[in-house]
Length: 233
Ligand code: DX5
Ligand code: ZN
Image (tube, rainbow, N blue to C red):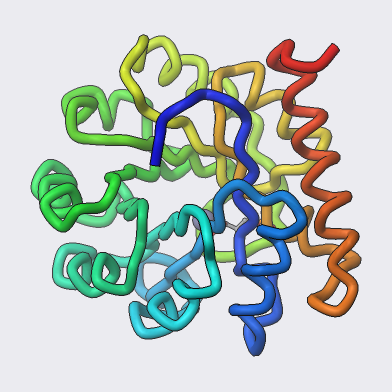
């Protein structure tokens, strides 16, 4: 994985056909996805359950590029090795998931993965201030984690501005997760985000047998975001 701040679209397979993950991952990549975002939920940290390391391992061969695994689980530490072995490129833990974020991040990097920290909407930017040397990505939750299809929380725009200033020229991605559409993505791109996770806004209207809408949806989000960063005029 190389680092750059160009806009990257990461479809969340939470909005895909759960009976067809392999083909869905391949379809969104073929249609222009930069990363594939994989939402792991435990029914404890968040009020919903998805899947664990075995499913991630099964999906892995169907993703040619970056597998971005978002762990909405507490505790996370006992399971980090399992997700690393499943082939995650990026492992993101929540700052709120346990008392020892620094240790979790150390574990993630020792396992050979890029390390991410996710911040719930009520968690301030300062939660990552003293771990900036240990992280590759900050995931700003723009919905309360647990479900796809929720509305964007606009108080998070200011948080992204603060994080962008705090990061300076460190090679740390700012990822936005929740409620991303062609209308909301430019707000976050302008504030300093470079990775945009989108579930419902990518998968709507398409399927593995009719994947063209995935491509149109990805393009619409990308073009809107790039306009906001000045890449497109
Ligand atoms: C929410 C998940 C998100 C979610 C985004 O808990 O972390 O990745 O799937 O879904 P949309 O894009 O539908 O808001
Ligand atoms: Zn997510």
